[in-house]
Each structure stands twice: as C-alpha cells, then as structure tokens.
Image (cartoon, rainbow, N blue to C red):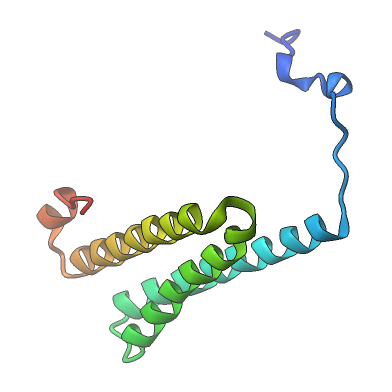
Length: 118
C-alpha cells in the first residue's frame, strides 16, 4: 500500500506546457471573482431564508444575477448558446436550492426529500 503511486502524476510527459497569457490571467481572475461572489451571496441567501430577514428577495435576486455574469464571461469561450444554457441550468440549480432551504426551514422534511428537479 505504501509503495502505490498513481499513474496520473507524470507531469514530465505533458505534451503542451501551460502558458499563462495576459488574456488567460484576466479570465482566471474574472472567474475566481465570480465564484467568490457566488459563495458570498449563497451564504447570505441561506442566512436570509433561515433567519427570516427582510432582505431575502433582494439577496436572492442578487445571487441569481451572478448567473448572467457567468454567462457573459463564458460567451467568448463557448459561444452564446452554451453560455446561456449554463446560465439557465445554474439559475435552476440555485432556485431549487433556495426552495429546498425554505422547505427545510419550515420543517417540511417530506417536501425536501421529494424535491424534484423541474
């Protein structure tokens, strides 16, 4: 067991070296910022729902706006069709998660177990 080495550690056999151009660095920074915002606003949405805060609607709207920001960042790479589909699926994921938190907060565990993907 101690002498096992995974086969995917052969970095020296990589054919194409990783080159960070200014464009790829900017894209990396933009996507990192978007994921940080996603984490930040997701946490605030959960806190707003569970704590029954008055800013729940505004916080959810801001979190859902992040999906459009992701789509705008992905359009140059994957085209508008794929970027818009990503935004649509991401928005559905976030909406379902918010509904699930609301059901759990209301102690409606049976609805949480049967939570469907629409």
